[in-house]
Amino acid sequence: MATIAEKILGGEAGEIVEREVDYIMVNDITGVPAFEVLEELEDADVPKRDKVVIVQDHYVPNKDIASAEQAKALRDYARRYNITNYYEIGKGGICHQVMIEEGFVAPGRLIIGADSHTCSYGALGAFSTGVGSTEAGVAMATGRLWFKVPATQKFVIEGNLREYVMGKDIILHIIGDIGVSGSLYRSMEFYGSTISHLSLSDRITIANMAVEAGAKAGIIPPDEKVFRFLRNRVRGDYKPVYADEGSEYEAIFEYDASEIVPTVAKPFSPANTVPASELDVTIDQAYLGSCTNGRIEDLRAAAAILKGKKVSPDVRMIVVPASENVLKQALEEGLISIFVDAGAFVCGATCGACLGGYLGVLAKGERCISTTNRNFIGRMGHKDSEVYLANPAVVAASAVTGRITDPGELE
Image (tube, rainbow, N blue to C red; front, side, top):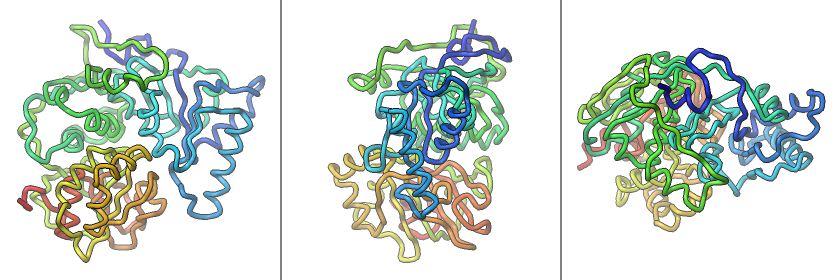
C-alpha cells in the first residue's frame, strides 16, 4: 500500500532513492548559478536539453544593470546550449504558470525546479518540489537526482464553501491550524468533496502554498478537470498515479468547508491567520497577482467586486496577470478595462513585488494586502513594512474601502 509520493518516487517513506526526473525548471535568479555548476562537471558539456525549461520572470523587465546582466547571462546560456524550452519576457510569464500552461506538468511526473513554489504542479497530480541551483545543475547534466521519500499526511475537506471563499482560504486555514512546520518534509495529499469541486486554479493555489507549511510536495489526485485541461496541451504521454486504498498516512486532518471564511494571514507568518471580518487595518497597497493567485479565475473574482467601483484614493492597487496568456484572456473578457477604470495599475506578467523586487516595493511603515504567498519581515520591501495575505476577492474589497475588508461587507 503506497501513497502518491511513494509511488512516483518508487520507494517507502524515509528511503533515499535516485530517480530520473521529467523536467528541470530554472528562472533568471536561479538559472545562472545552475549553469555554472553544469559547466564545472566533467563530461557535462551537453545538458539534458529536452528536460530543461528556462523562464525569465523574477526581475523582468530588468529593473537595473545587475538584473539586466543576470538576464543576459541566462539568455546566453540558453543559446549556447540550444535550450529550446526557453521563455523570454513577453512570451511566457511567471515560471510556475508557464510550466502548467505549456504542458510540461502532468499527473505522475517527477519535476524539480530551482524555486520553492515548484510544489504548485502537485495540483495536477505530479510530484514536484523545489531544489537549489546546485541540484538543478547536476540534474541538467545527468537527468537524475536523489530524493528522500517523504512521509505523507492526508487532508480531507468536505462540504460546500461559503461565498467569497477560495482555495487561498483553504490553505491558509490549514496552515493556521498546523503551523509553518506542520508538514515539514512531508507530502500533503488533499481529498474530499470540496477539493473535487474546486477549479484547477484554486487547486494550484493550495499546492503552491504547501511549502509554507514546510511540505516537500502538495498533491491533489488528478481527475477529469485535469485531463480536460491537458488535452491538446500536454507534452508527451503520462500516467495518472493514485494512492492505494488503505495507504498508511502519518496523520489525517479533516475540515468542514462551511467553517472556512475569507481568511487573512497577518504579519509575519502565513500561519498567523484570522477571519478578514475581524480586522480593521488600513492599507497603502493592494496587490493582485503572483504564481499563487494571478490566474484568470483570480482576476475574474477581483473584477467582479471592482466593477463600477473605484480604488480608494489612499490605496495603490497593482494587478499582475501570471502569464501573457492570462493577460490576453483578461483583455478579451474586459477585465483589464475594469481594473483600469477602477484606478488600478496593470502590467505584464512578472514576479516583481512578490519578492520585494520592484513594481510595488513597500516603504517603511506601509501595509499591503496581497494575494502572494509569503508575509515575512521585509518580504515586499522595507523591514518595517507589513504584508497581509488574502484571496483576490478580499484584496479587491480592501482596495475599495482602504482597509482590510471581507467582501461580504460590500453587498
